[in-house]
Amino acid sequence: MELEGSKPLLQDDRLRFETLLSDLSARFVRLRPDQVDEEIERALREVTEFFHAHRCGLLDVFADRKVARLTHAWYADGVRRVPPANNCAQGFSWSFERLVVQKEAIAFNDLSELLPDGAADLPAYGAQGVRSTLMIPLFIREDVRHIVVLQTMEGGGTLSPEYIPRLRLLAEIMVQAIERRDAEEQLRLALEEVRQLRDQLHQENLHLRREMKELRGGSPIVGQSPALRRVLAQVEQVAATGSTVLLLGETGTGKELFASAIHERSPRKSRAMIRMNCAAIPAPLIESELFGREKGAYTGAISKQIGRFELASGSTLFLDEIGELPVDIQVKLLRVLQEKCIERLGNPRPLPVDVRIIAASNKDLEKAVHEGKFREDLYYRLNVFPITVPPLRERREDIPLLTFAFLEEFSTTLGKHVDAISPSNMDTLMRYPWPGNIRELRNIIERAMILATGTKLQVTLPNGAGSKSLQTVTLEDLERKYCLSVLDMTGWRVRGKNGAAEILGLKPTTLTSRMAKLGIRRPTS
Image 1 (cartoon, rainbow, N blue to C red):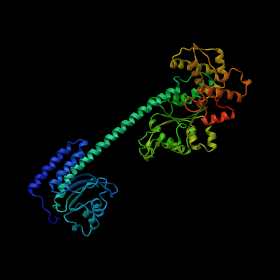
Image 2: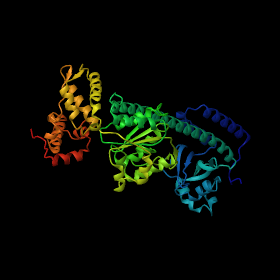
Image 3: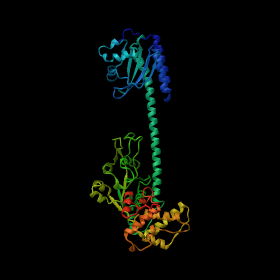
Image 4: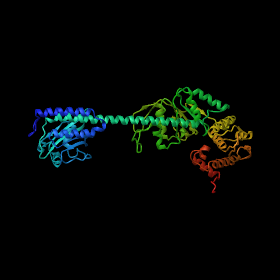
């Protein structure tokens, strides 16, 4: 229907329009993403001037169909401007229902033409001083995502409905440029995220390799004792399978090394083993560390994080101190072991993973099950092939080999030529009970190497412990002397890396309680 007072396009106007359309098409095809906004503003000016209107704009329609924002606009001199932050749907409920829901264009040359259906919108149009309006919905697939608005103000001319298909063509050229720019930006952001994830994975892989090297201490598993040979035989038996392995044993016995030995003898050895200490990560972060998270999954999650399970897909995941996992995470770990799929925090879509699990604990997990601190079903899932790593006191014949292995390691790292140890010192090491196991032995040798001034190593155990027969002192006296010596060696630092608690293989709170029981107090001077 042609509006009253409207004027159809003349032949000359049609030719000018075709020229404008061709010119805009050519310009927008060649645009760089950073030029789109400026070129759209220029095009809106040309469109407004071509139709002898006062203002022209493009609006974005949001998914709820109740909000529309002005993204680009051009105004003739003296025409009231609409702030970009305004919700342009406010006050125009009938118009937006027709545009967005019914998907029909709107055209009028006098506000009275809105009656009776559009009466609710009359105050808003009147407040803006509008005389003539063309509003056209623009589609992305089947949804209205943009609206083009062309208007004349009071005292201005009229707009013909004949303009609608031509105005739609011009607007679609601009919208396509916007969509292309946004798609390119999304692609750029996605590529940047991929690059960041690749760099993150590379850095994590380097970190994990360094961490593994530190755990290994630069040495392979050393020893020839029957107890060690039994464990190595079990390692050989299970390594080539994909079975879950549970390593049990006291702190400091080298469970990490045996996990590495299993991995390095398995078909998965071409990829780095991923390690996670369940006791070292705060409980609220364990789930995202294990299974990953999406950006915005919770407050503070400012980026996507790949979890240890995804990192370990196709490889081995070593879960140290598995007994420290919170019960709610035990449930989720059990489900992953059963279904071989994970869900990142913030993303319910299951992701398949191919991971071999090696778990380790210095706790009695069976006792923890009876006490309700560890799930029975998870325990049986993990306990497919249990290996108990013997404490150092049960493989004393390995102490000389371990001592010389550490001697060689620290000779290289410290740049000292020390190649001998006295028989009396070795006898002292052999008779000492080693509550901290191999980790404690390594720390004792490192300290002795730091203090060494010649080519022969002089080892001093805590307050001479081990130089006497064990029958001549009480266990409490020996424990007190050893704790004092370790505290003295660490400068009375209980917590942190190379602190007394770590050397003794205890939690800091446990060591503090033990010190109080033994009457150990820090010297005041």
